[in-house]
Image (cartoon, one colour):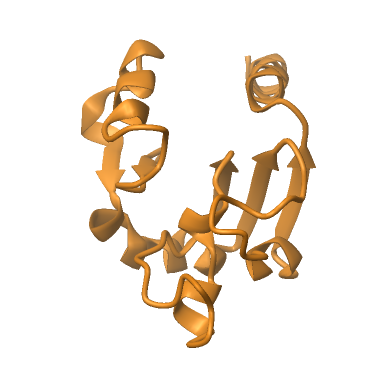
Length: 129
């Protein structure tokens, strides 16, 4: 089962990521909001995080002294495996380091996300047909 999750503040303007997913042909019925998907991460095999930082930062929940404490986040770290695709290990917009990037169940896949996704899709198609 494949689903997409969008954080309400992700992107440069509200709704931007919904538009991008629609343009990519992603059916809207598998796109879920944070509140709809957060409780399901415990039963999720793998999460691909594309370009996000603050919106998947566990410090928002785990560190009461963090600048983003209390901010709603996608709890991707609760899944079995997390693969984060981003250009670098740099902090996000809030300037807060993300402990999720250092968790045992997280792998970083650095580089251009579009190129990386295209290569992953080609690899899966070649393997599965």
